[in-house]
Image 1: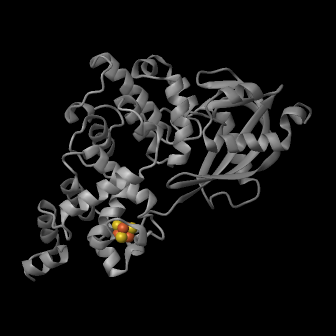
Image 2: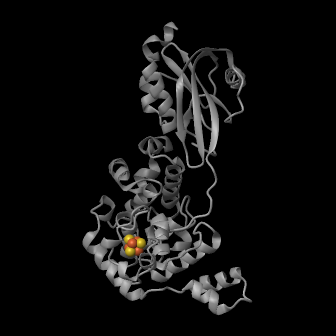
Length: 392
Ligand code: SF4
């Protein structure tokens, strides 16, 4: 349909202008009401019984939406249940120190979500009497609330007719409409968002948004979509064209940046030295071992990595740093960065300073350690440093 519109506009019209017209009035190549009724009926019969679907509490619905960004449903369930046991309402969350919130989040990754959710809880308690605001203009200004969270929470918890466009919905819409343009470019994204907005079932927007997401998660999967079991297959353009798996189209994604990371496990009398990462950026404010980094391929000559690490330790204020041995190598991949870590057992004198601590084996368990750092701790365990490190 959008290609038809391009053609009908004629050869004199630029493609970008044509696209802007399409977005202003998205053409939808199927009967909207029939698709809505069919999909909502399917959802109400087949939806999974998930803990956050058994509540109307906006706080719990909001928490689930925060957790489900970047996290699979199976993984999120246990975290969600633990979280609401410890923080059953916004007041309890707002009253807790952020360190405790991060500890409950440990292993879920993307810790900024937890920090923002905690900050937002405090803001709601301070300015809105602990009641989650249902006004999009107010809710949308809270920390961490982007367009997806806004649409999901307000539609599910308050019945606001707003779309919630996540990766599942982008995929379902692009296939249903047979949209053969990259959806990660501005024009493509606008088209998908405009269609998603037009599709929202006004009488049940929360169920509608969840129905779209559920279809994407269970049936219209990224690979090998189950078109034969799909309730809306009869109206789906990609199904008719036989190119469902090829959609959505995406532009070239940025390559993962390989980082050479030399990590120092500074060991003294059964304890290791940790530092808090800076308050902004990757793993902001979480505990980490001191380390130096360079783009992969920088340290090519023998001894260069070790020399850089010792210089780095001196800059961290460690006196007489010495490398005892290399403990092992491990990697951790974030969305756009891969840490290729070489871990060294070191000694040296580290003066007490803010944002650092000496931790024994038991204390390490109490700290919030991101997965990348847990990999280093696993190396310490397998090298047996807790029993033998002092004698090295
Ligand atoms: Fe997705 Fe296939 Fe259903 Fe189309 S028919 S929406 S491609 S599962």
